[in-house]
Length: 363
Image (cartoon, rainbow, N blue to C red; front, side, top):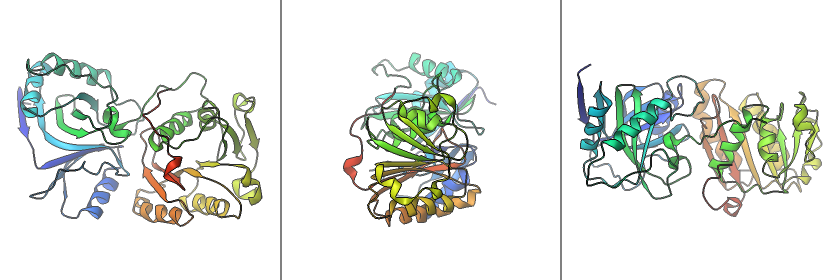
């Protein structure tokens, strides 16, 4: 590697994703905008060549299913020295106004760890130390406010950084790397706690204390715990055993059966439905459809985890979303959450008023 070099790349956009999802991400962008071409990529990181005259008046595919974060590329820096590389970064930024600095590592393996690694934090500190004198200090790897401009430094490799920027226009784009992250609580019985917590943050669904929620595929109980910690009354339906800690909670009820085995009228007691079963997406959707379309069942909103048992199932996501709309859920979104695996989360609400107003909750 040369000692240090930078290369501007204005006609490009970038996106980060879960390692392994690159092909699905490229296909998603190509389907929506055939004139955009995928360019340089690594596991967990993809750039796109933009056609001449491409408008930057709105964020680049900020509501993508498979992108964790997206932005406009300013260029790349290849450098052995972080101190020298920091100066190269600010040369690429030039006079662009930014409010936050996010530095993180791409997802180079199938990992659900926080992308703000110690190395990323150290490089972020070096960038701030080299901040030009005419710039005000920037918060590093903090949650941005909606509408603020974020400077992105993606560590593609330890000595190769991709520089870009984006506007924080939705919940994931406010977090470093678009990864809604927290440490696993000590009392959590499984990592499903983090999946449910991140799904609630991303979707903004207003599941409130005292609400009754039914969960299909609840064992061993991590997801149920995340709901219980919000004061929700949870009924878990799963033929497998629940953790004793969850069973002991006064607001939890376990029905040891499959969702399809419970009489449909029993679901009239619930306001919300969540599902995360290790079955094919069609099976989950068939079961949920039979429940929510049953007369008198008042399910206001859904959080469904659909397993992509093969990556080619990604092409069916739009059809799945349209199917859910046909059940009367007008507001449907999908996202591959960093806290999950080879799967997507779909949030569906009958009315937009059921979406929580306000910023992300960290507790």
